[in-house]
Image (cartoon, rainbow, N blue to C red; front, side, top):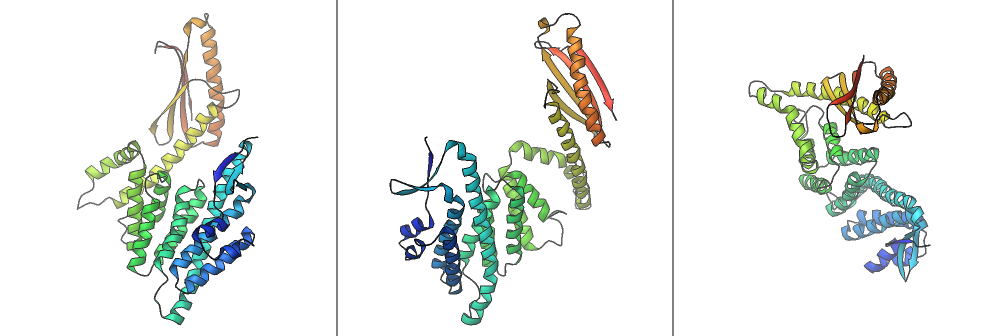
Amino acid sequence: MSYQTVNYQTAVDLAVMKGHWAIRILEDLSPEQRTTKMEEFFLQAVSGQDEETATLYFSFLLQSVSDCELAPFISEERGKTVLQYAPESRDEFEKARANACRMGSLKTMDLYGKLSGLKKITVEKRGLESLRLGTKKTMLAVVATQWRETKDEKEADNCFNFLMKVIKSAGYSDEEKLQQEVLRGATDTGFPANRLLRHFVQLVPYGVCDYNLDHKIRKVASILLIAWSRNCDLSRSSRALRACQLLLELKETREFQTFATFDLLRRVSAEIAAFDTAIYELLEVFKKGVDNVPGEKSVSYPNASRAEILITVSVHISNYHKGELEKDGHKWFEKAREHALAWRKKYRKYSVNLKLVVVGWYSTEPKFERKEEFN
């Protein structure tokens, strides 16, 4: 069997590469024991204000966490450490890699929470004002990277909430600048645009014109908004601007601000989004099982509670004898009708106008047409 191979460095390999004495300890420990020992060494280095050593131990610690999660796939090949897996184990391997990143981020958040206690000891014993910024930056970058890379939105929320908690507690300008630098780096090109938008709204639910917003929140909101405009495609951003165009052109003046109006727009948009999601659910049902409905589906919304669904089925007219096309048209419509009735029982506050037309491949003139209102 041919195995897939990926280059890898364990915590021991990393210590060897750095030429660090910790290699003598790490070699004789399991990955779990290495994690415990490196956490102990890391906290000691931070307490001693040895930033360079603390950062090095933190890298050994993260690698030990990764070693724990990837242990089933770690092997030796030609004197080098590699990750190996059979083709049929790829999903399991990718899951282990993702879990290694997740556990590294969780460990980082846990350790960062312990720094405040170390800070008090440091101030009392050494009279120093703060822990070294380089170590903090390294740790925050790990969480920010996971915030960006994870496919799990709940985990993304957890990372973002942690970052915001840290940012809100920042005590001086250098630390604020460091945190903002980490956020800008994480939200560079490629960050999921929907995630940025969701966290922006979470951060400033009443808009950036809310006078109660702390200056730190305003700065983060600005970073998220700039990143959103950079990471979403042009069509999405232009649609967002078009949706607000009338309000901006007709109402936004010095005499009449639109804060309340935009709040109404936000709430109405949420209702429309829920309606659109429900309609999409019906369209997905049309595709499933033996009762799937053929043809191209298009949707229009006359208002915020009524949808018009057009199903266009293209056929070779020459393949049909007299009456057969109409028979198929009714059969397809009945399938769509059955799905629409079931959907309507679930979503009684919405109405749907369902229309099905059958056309020839080379003609847009309907050869069959049937419609019905569900309200």
